[in-house]
Picture 1 (cartoon, protein in one colour):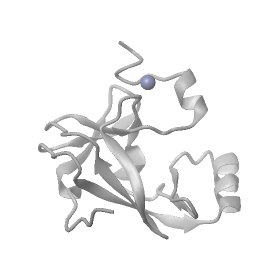
Picture 2 (cartoon, rainbow, N blue to C red; picture 1 turned 90 degrees about the vertical axis):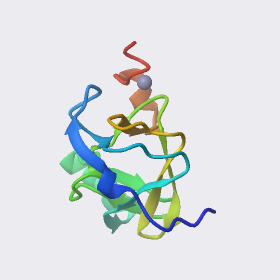
Picture 3 (tube, rainbow, N blue to C red; picture 1 turned 180 degrees about the vertical axis):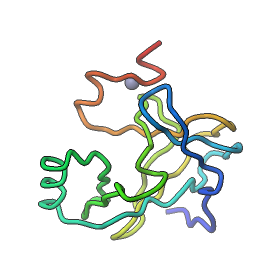
Length: 132
Ligand SMILES: [Zn+2]
């Protein structure tokens, strides 16, 4: 696993997205295989995750392979949109966080996206690939 010494969170800004609602965008060019930002939130159990998704319609929960990380209270990462050809991957970090890593070079002004990876997203996808 690559050790990252710094992130690029200062270079990420929230704006309206052509995909849906708000999105996060690069303020400068970000090279491939860089830590864009650390995904951190409230670490919760699978049971609590299910409750928040069902009762509160919370769609901001990530999974690190063991725990669920609710990012609803965050200022940036909660707005990341899905794309079928994303420019970032979500990679393992530790119990309470995940790494958001660029899978290719991201140009200044480009929206930062990931593959949400669950079936429903592909059925009504509005990403830059599917809406072409
Ligand atoms: Zn799509």
